[in-house]
Each structure stands twice: as structure tokens, then as C-alpha cells.
Image 1: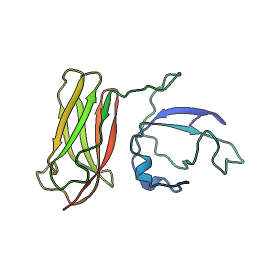
Image 2: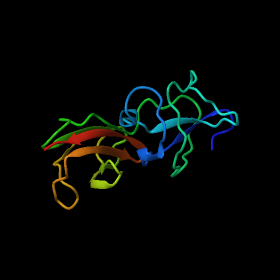
Image 3: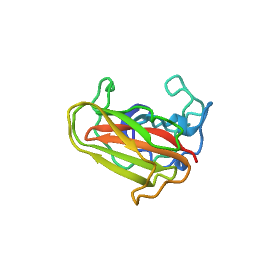
Image 4: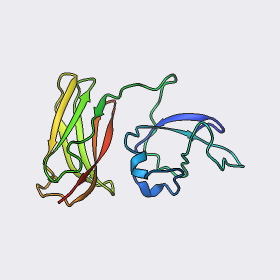
Amino acid sequence: MPPTNQWARYAVTLVSPSDFTQILGPGAFEDALQNVELIHIRHDVAPYVQFPDNITGNVGIDRLLLIAVAGVPSGPAPTALPVDLAPPSPNPSRGPVALSLRSFDGGPVEIQIVDVAGRSVRRAELAPGAPGPRLWIWDGLDDRGERVAPGSYRARARGVGGGTSRGLVRVR
């Protein structure tokens, strides 16, 4: 729980869009989650904040499933994550999808494709290598070797220190 009436930083994994009941402002929830690895949370005692303020903009969070709390050092937020995932290409796609990523520490990278319910569809582990750009091609198959159904998916690339995720769409 953040300190009362103060902002605090927490590293979180967002599990289910259904846990969020209200979005203020234009755009879709999926758009808002394109590169979320760190969020700011403010806990106000009654009377609760009823409108966006100049710190939060048009965002309100009313329920979170906290999976783990990681210590976040004070000071400016990091400018680069250990694994940075570029937008999938092509997207949308009916064939193979290139996932270009950059590993800043050269450690192992886990790649995971999940469906809209958050279920793992495909998982791959890239062995440690030199820091820098890397490429993994998703053939559109799940872990059983079967072609996935058309729809929305999310690609996640994660190293020891964190990572990023990107949305992608499969079409017939």
C-alpha cells in the first residue's frame, strides 16, 4: 500500500484487464497497457479524489492484484529496461511475426506469447549472448505445434531485470 496521500513507485505485472472497472479519457485499455512496467499509485484517505489531477492526467486505478513488490530506488526512473521489445512486424499478420528486441545486459531472455485472457500460448528461452539486438520469429504456432486462432495476443520479452510487452493481431 502506498503511503497515505503520497505517490509511490511499484513494479507490477498487470494480470487481467477485467480487474479494472473504469477508464477515464479517450482510447482503449489495451492501448494504455502497451509498455507498462511501472505505475505510480496514490492512496488518498476519504474524501477520495473524484477527478483527475495534474499528476495523474486522465487515469484512475481502483483495483490491483499485487503479485510481488520490488524495491524501487528513489531518484529518476530508468531510461532503458534490460530488455526492450520493438513493435511486432508485420502486425497484423497471418504468417510469421518478427520480434526484434534489445538486451542491455546480454543475459537470457524469456519470450512469451499470451492470449487476451493472459494464458501462455507459446514460450521460448533465448540463451545468453552479447548485449545488443536480437531477433526471434514466431511462426504462429502454440507450444503444442498447432496454429493459434485469429485474434489479439501479447508478446512479452523479459530478462533478469525486467522487460516489455507489445500487442499483436493474428488474422486468417
